[in-house]
Length: 241
Image (cartoon, rainbow, N blue to C red; front, top):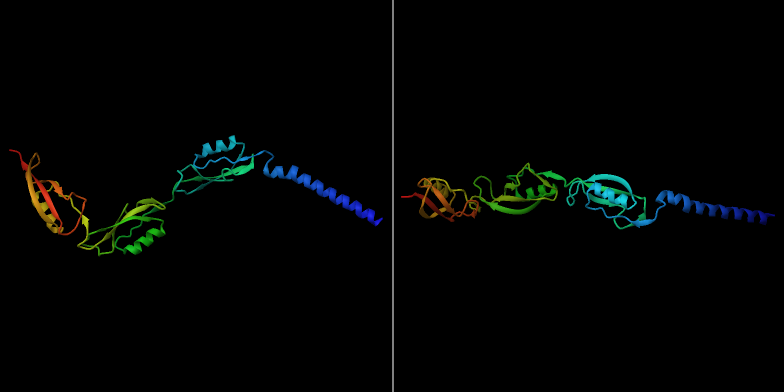
């Protein structure tokens, strides 16, 4: 009698397990994962949001969450990420979540003039800004090794990871940019040359429509890098006869 009762309970348990297995596979799982066929998730990375959504729906997937993120690679409004990943196999009807770029995160360039180069570079690095180049320029007011300026200047904005130029003082006798002399009277230009520690090395005159005695050509040209003691050549206007 006991054996018969055990056998009956065994049959009941096995039957219940079988029914549960059938229910799980044919009712619960389709409800969770969708009852459609499996397919590769489309790649919508880099697409505009509206276009990406059309592609997802056309491939029989569903639209999931859309979240905005800063991104320095993809333009604003374009897809920067997706889940499930492109190319992965999923049931059609599954939701595809999207990350939409809102462009790179911008950072304001700080005022770091007259501090040491090392300290300035640490401040820039902490903000995610890199120094594209470091150039030394002569300064009569800022000690050697201190930052003279930045390009772009303080208050401007750069994307995170952006690069700028850092100008560092080399003291009174370092490299500096040649001043503009063209358009100045000769005497004024000569004074500027001397006050900058340069040498007036040659003067020529040529007929010109400009008033007599004005500088019409200079070498080195304005903006070129020069040092104390470099020679400057001027060409001065002379009235046509």
